[in-house]
Image 1: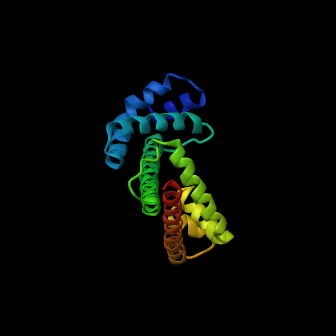
Image 2: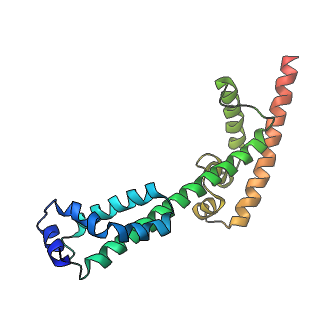
Image 3: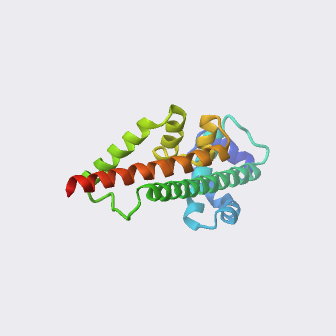
Amino acid sequence: MKELEIVEQLFDREEAVLETLPRLYGKLCSHIAYHILKDTQDVEECLNDTWYQAWESIPPNRPASLKAYLAKLARNNALNMTKAKNAQKRQVQIMAQSLDEIDEIIGDGRDFSESSVNNLYISQILNRFLDTLPTSERIVFVRRYFYMDSISETADFCGLSEGHVKVMLHRMRKKCRKAFEQEEKKKERQGS
């Protein structure tokens, strides 16, 4: 079957073409996607997206070379999937870093998932601490530790340099740690 006939089938919305595309171009598109993704399940998903996009984009597009068109769709889909995966990994790293910084503040190895009373206590201390901060510092603190923004995202949002945000966060963590220590001492005095 010639490319022109396949393109015409796509224009005529003949669903049989959805079986023809993988049969004729599956190997090529799979090869391209695998070299980018290195995972057979991801390649399968990428190819499904490729055939769907071809169906959706022809018409109105009428590619001069269907082979090149499908190869480009497969490549772009694979690249987009890789970007999405990397962004997800970066987000996990940012969250882990933020949680480590919070642990530095609250410390002493508490398991916050266990006790809602403990979580309420921590929330109250944090809220009192945040009330003592100027608005600009409070925004930086909340963006970093509530929204889990990266240093870069926080800096962009606040119109500050990354270095300035890092210094602000370091100082706020020290102040917050002191607030927690004072609350612990107060709690101990009340308990004895």
